[in-house]
Length: 606
Image 1 (cartoon, rainbow, N blue to C red):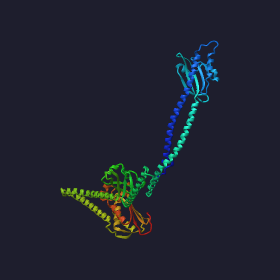
Image 2 (cartoon, rainbow, N blue to C red; image 1 turned 135 degrees about the vertical axis):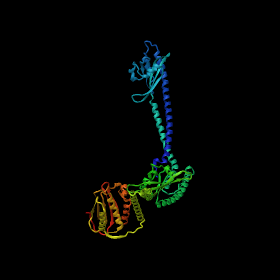
Image 3 (cartoon, rainbow, N blue to C red; image 1 turned 45 degrees about the vertical axis):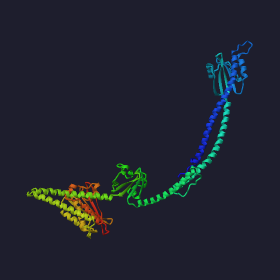
Image 4 (tube, rainbow, N blue to C red; image 1 turned 180 degrees about the vertical axis):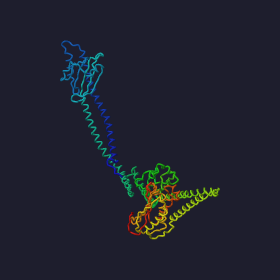
């Protein structure tokens, strides 16, 4: 189990929760307190300025409506005198402006040059136009906040001027900054206390949880001997007691499961058949070694994959099909080199409720059985066909003779000749079948004798050369050098007779039949080659199968049974040799076979 990082532990999370709760609470309280305090201070400041402005507004109105004599001060001088007596720390500047926006007086001694000029301030224009108070907060040249108030001077319902006041409200925000600092300090102290208390409280919660975590890690490694310490009788203590009880039950269950696992592993290991188990979704969860060998795929490529994909039946079957399947499936895993067929039987794993919990598949190598069955079916079909053809011919001719054809002296002899020919053909076929059956059962003995193979081979070739027609030429490509072999001369004569007969049958007019003998790797290698029609490359290996013919119609017309080369293979193999063919379609065929030699002398074809 991966170790939990310190900053990801529940200990830190509990402390963080406490800290976050305090921060949120302090922020909510602070925001509400600061906002209300700022609103109160600003309101008090503005009320203070407004009260003083009310007195000033009265004095300014009296001066504006006063009728002056020649000895009285001018309006501007009177207003300046009034404004000079109102200097304070809070008020930065006061201006008196008449209804025509002309500045009549200002309290700023350093800014007397503006007197007599028109005021372009928006608040002044709004105040005179709307006959109401307007205010705003802005920054001066020193980036200090100032509160600007424009209040109209009204006489008998008519605006005769306005007062423009700039007051220093920066002090209010300075006080707010001090209060915020005090609040931040209090928050910091509260956080420190909260962190300390949170750590202490978190330890009481996380200590038993850490013990249970360590015990769970030990259990994952198979150690059930440890027990969790119980710190109290609260919910966590009850959890620790339940955890210890669970540990005991798991220990008992693991012992039982391990015993069953060993039994199952022993059974699966010693089975000759392959076994595959799946979960309820059809994914492979178990496979034994015989199944791995039969499927020829690595174990890591099988586990957790769908069984229909592993068996290669996904195009035709689904997992639900396999659940309801009653019969076995043949899996054709054959390659170009050799056939390979598996038989797969399926059994459903069900709970007591009937719920499907998985599937068991048993694989068995059925290649030989399928091969035997196929050869048997093919053999029966071939024998039936080979017997039906002459029997059909004989039946039709005998029926014609029975209908009166025997009276015709010209037709009757030819009909009888055909019937006799077909009878001889069936006799040859039956004799060949009996000979193959005898060789298959190994119920025969070889009458071996040591002979000079070249002399033996020459005598057989001479016999054929005397009786052959002139349409082919024999070419002997070996010397008279003595090669001694231990063979059954009768059976080997039959083999060579059959090969030469086939070569003569399929050789065209003017063709050559070549014979060769050479010593190769302590074996005597014999060659018989013709210039016949040849055999397609994909069928070369099949010429030694029973009843195989390259050209069935031509072979049957020549009296062949299709068993000659099959008998030849059995006889050569009985002598400890090997027989094979090499051919190119349209170029002829060469038959080779080998025999054990009794001399170390080597020879070459001439």
